[in-house]
Image (tube, rainbow, N blue to C red; front, top):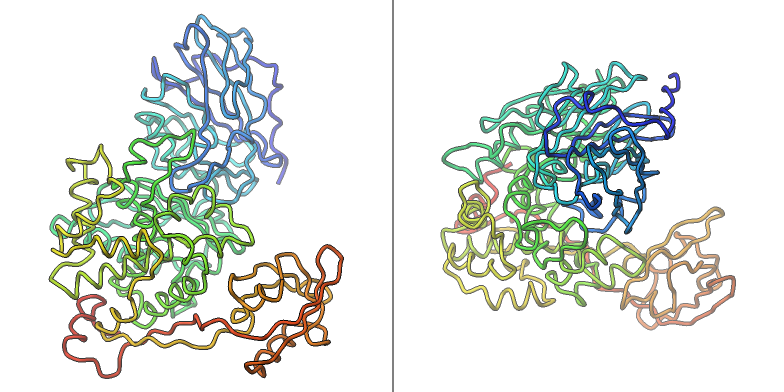
Length: 621
């Protein structure tokens, strides 16, 4: 493809006010252009009709809701310039994400460039195959004008006249391809609408009275390779299951339209929720192929991702923690409730697939078993509670290092297990379930007419809500399992539902508390060492190179063979390198308790177990 037209020189004045069609008298107006696909540059102009007389300030969020890490989006903003009408004015950077323009009598216009080459769903990406951006990483906010209407003019790229736009940002004046002017009620609403541009494969269906669209990027390479009919059929079933959970009588979605933005990559995986859309990244093999008759694990994983982000349209986008009401986009917003908002969502993502008839009971239980195994293998669960892990997400979960598994626990995984445990306890001891709790949260905190929607869910609100629904006292449960480090009693709870729990011996490296990466030449580099395991006792640490075990060069096969033959009382001699210095230790061999869990429906469940399991998971298969 030919190189796109070079951007205009930086010194050129901005376009006149007449070109900003659709702009409002008071609110900010943006023009977004795909300036240089090879350099991955978006060009942005921001026009403000009535800037602050003493000098207008601008700022960019440092994080995006749904991903709890300060990501410093402003590091990708290049050379901000300002004009007062057609005259250049000074603009200074006053903070890591803030700028201040000199006083201006008349309309103020900024022009700047944003580098966009992040394939994730959180920021922005541009090359000659597609363009994508979250407004939170591209569009500066004008201080004092955040609550005014914001308009955005999306310009079609000269190098790709066949591109079209997919976004739920409301249209004011757009062409058939979706380019043109769109409007948001305020800045918070603006940043909740990601934008995808390119050659898009579009699929449509209706669920809960709402129009749903799947827009798949790089459609020119996928036509004929994606079973669109199957994807639409399956997603419709998933969406209807979610809608029925929250609105069992009305069966109406809380939005008029919903958009799945899908970016297929070689091996990507991830999603980010928005109020009426989601940005998804998946591997190309995850999409259903017309010749594949059975749903494989990759496709089931993709459906689970769609289910997870769709559930978030209720749980966290509308039912919010008090700490996010409203968001503070310029600093961390810690809350102890991420285990509820992410963990409960992780519980329901596969459960909704099961209810939609897209997962067998065994496939569902296999997923629960994988989560159980991961948590049991995480030594940090004995160090940090799930509530504290939620609070520390900003400094730990999203900044993993070689010791993260020894220092914290995933509020996604343990939160999902707590949701399961709470659901089973409610079902076993009464007629209520976690579904009833979610509906109470929805009617009290989430729906447009919810009395506490503006207040948000308090940090200590859930025990009382659970007691209101199921009549049980949850204070001891929360003290032990939410604010303490004791795992919920899932083995006994699952037994009451006719589910058998078995453990298998772990692979050798897991049993030794060791994770390695094979380097060129077969040398083993230590990635992680689990607290309390043999590897830690032997003195290994991240980045060490394992040279020999018992005098034999230490390939993976050597370690596995030695572990398989080991008996209590054996002493292993280990030779390793740390910063190019040889180390040697003699350490008694031992294995960590097995963490591989297998769950199966009991062969001969009692009548009570069979009924509980059927009420929870439905009938076979």
